View (cartoon, rainbow, N blue to C red):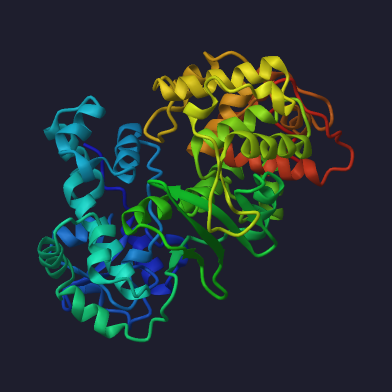
Length: 499
């Protein structure tokens, strides 16, 4: 049986005593004398060693009857979803994050993973110390606790955001999980400013936020995204209702700030999850660097950019179409094509500011669209239509609950999508950390120190970097961007010049 997904006792003890933010979310400290559980970074006086127990998840501590701390606020902890040594558990956590237990029983989760409910429960308890249902319930309560603490949303809307359709059941679950009714916690937060909700999104340091914004700004879709040196803004649409979000850094904290517009409270969990994916906030860079730094070239890249992460995208189909538009053209040309696509086939959204008032086309909008009219070559227009049809028919999905191999196989079955484009989609749309476009010319030249390696040699060179090859890609691209001797051309199947 697997051991719990928990650092060693000595590591936990040292991280707790030093309040090491790199371990935030990797374990939780429960204090028997107070009955509460905390993050490793809790500012409260350090409890006695013999009063402390360590848990691999907040749900495990909650299952043993502990309540979340009001000072360090476990709801702010980054997730530890990248348990890559166990692919099945990874997929299960991805499905949980996508809300499968909000509408379906645990048996549906087990069926999706080709396990019996008993096998699934044993896997979760062995690795995370809690059942899938307990993990789901704890996440709901912690989200509610965050909304009650940081916003002025009415309790009824908080209940909806946390997935409760009954206020009575929400009150009961919250009291059971936090030891007080929601109204009592809300009264303690009387100083919260009114207006649009602003949520704190924590991460384990370091994070090179400026580099992330620069990457996203270069690829922003006009009418939908606006990115400057300090923040990311975009329009989002949920059930026909449009609003704006803004993400910026929180000075002095290992956190980003997510400003929500007038959003349906039921959309908040999905919004938070997507923002965390765009900025790769749940990455454990200590684990990534421990693997990659064995390569001298990557060690140099990490020394130059220790906070580099994998930039994601808001919507899988949007990223995929943007990738196809950028095949064999410059980033600027791809941006022009994206603007034309949105203007011609996307929707106009009333009541929003100019420049952030468009909706990206849905797959159904592009299945038979005359894409040649925006300047796309005939073959690339056919690829976009085939991509859209595959999404409509369910032959291609952008759920993270699938293997890299399966996604690449399904994507490359479509005309005009080769391995490079498929891996680029997997890297940015799905956030799969082992995605690696071995056919990329820039990667081949960096690894060949100016002499282009072949695709097989590039793939072979990457094997020691598994399962973190996507992070290696970002470091190699950044190294290429600072190397004056490298040309800026692209390979045949490269969606765009990454440097």
